[in-house]
Image (cartoon, rainbow, N blue to C red; front, side, top):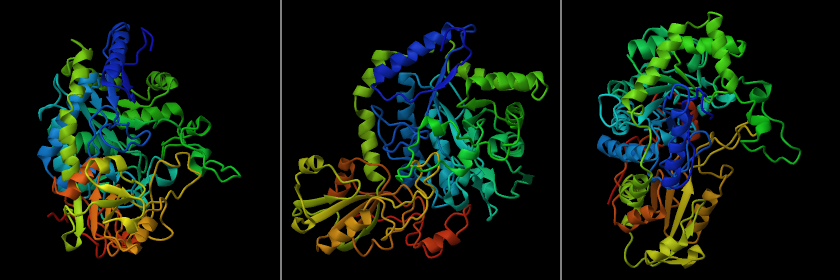
Length: 566
């Protein structure tokens, strides 16, 4: 950015030490101060305090404290824990100059095949509502709106994103629909009310568009993407739900989804897939679902008039497009001024006009204490859900000395050895086999521009659906006659029907270190988690359930809220 430029909101994906990030953000603020109006910079980030990060959806934690993903907080179902997490993360963000968090996800994950469940608070409307509000209160330093200690929350993704048709994701044209055959959209929207009452600074609409005619609270939606959907943003969000903050679009909504975006990229003869980030293809990616026939000026006008105040992921040309929409009368100056006023007020509320800079030395000192990580480690362990503990194998007896390690998330032998165990090379040599594994998945659209980012489809551990070899590893360990412990990273509600008879112990985790797992296995910390979603018994049950209705698969293997301890 050059002095005189008008940009004053950015997203950071820097992954570096705290002092490096803080220095870079101070340099950016100096540029803002030197600009024509001297407006301070607002710096936002995708979530960056967990183990998993998907390009465009999260940032590697790096030097920031590492916690379970939100679904792990949901397993504890304790608003105080979620609020404490948010308070500590807020301190880290503000220390390095990050003033806006593009979080939390208030999407209710009623469709078990959906790829983004790990960043939600689960399947239960009441739990999602309570934890979303607690998150906002922790990030914004209170329940009365934005103040000088706040990190603004942008709660997402308004409109029912957790009810994706067939569990497919609307970053992609093939997954553009959200669907509500159970008539539950009202409840998907109501989970935002606590956050709105606490003064959430922002709300982000989903990319998705309604499938067919959808009505909520007496309002019929347009069959267009949420960021263009005036009934959804103005009539419902602003009107019936009384939201006063900034409506921020998801990234790149103004781009056209062209034929390449819709039909997929041509696959090389070798069969190798085109990786995400290939500029030859990613520039064709858009999410203007339902408004593809509009001109750029018509499209930006429709979104602004629908209720979007601020666009994410814009291109330089979009600025002139908005000006053209005003000069041609499609958007009024009053509407633009309304949006600008909302954005500027929040900068004043945060105290950025008085002092946008951060203390680099203080940032370095905060991150060096290790206190935040110690608290995060405890939550990692406590959030484990114990699903099976045959013959009370856990906590492991002191006589268990030799362990075999396996699975796609295989534990670090050095970490295990440091805890007094001997790591052996085959299951048959071991007193116990410990397998850290991932939830099964498919990537059914290999020609998608964003191929590789989304785990969709089949949830079952079974032959023929074993992308990482985890099911084969479990069977091999069991065949060796050794007691088997399976620790599943539950990014989606995995179907464990074929696993239960192969393992003595089955645990679900939601983002943990090896040490946090060992704390649970050895009894240093007891597992306290309860399932934040039900675990279906079969894919037949999954395909028969309604995508917008919670807890409705037939004969679930484990119900919502199940969890043992010892």
